[in-house]
Image (cartoon, rainbow, N blue to C red; front, side, top):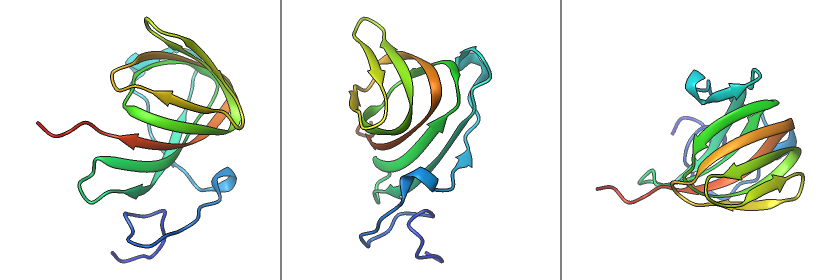
Length: 128
């Protein structure tokens, strides 16, 4: 690893990241996911397990409506707000300080009211 910055790659050291002003990188949406508006996504993986199955990071989306199929994820909203409709499940209204859990395979529709920034922990399924 050429840099000790936790914002670059997996690290064997403990670290802290100030989420509200962390620099994020563009993560273009698949146009098929956009229902309305012109939402833009940015993010940064701040830690990844050696096997690539656990990710910790920061994600942000600007206002609009998008669809997604979720991973097994726990996230905490830092700023902004959204309504997350889970197909065949609940409608989650999330804002600053809220923690939410999404199940792997959940099909969701995100209506982002104010640019939303979240910190997340994702566990990916076992390799088959």
